Amino acid sequence: MGIFDDIKGAADANEAKVEAGVDQAGDFVDSKTGGQYAGQVDQAQEFLKDQVGAPNEAPAEPTDPGAA
Image (cartoon, rainbow, N blue to C red; front, top):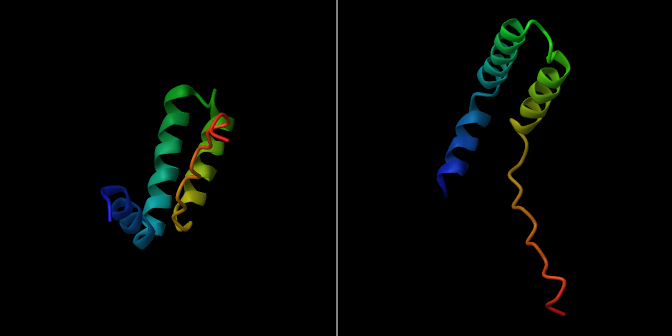
């Protein structure tokens, strides 16, 4: 088990706290930018929240088109 798996496990075990932190960080960015990037911040917050609790998926192996 790698370090990223350990981090993912800790985040999954504390899902509510991680989501609250994501919200807090997004609110901080919105306050510092005057809401100029609110749409992008909200999109990033939703993406991160979706990642918490999601099963770990191994990335697909890249295929070499010339290796046929």
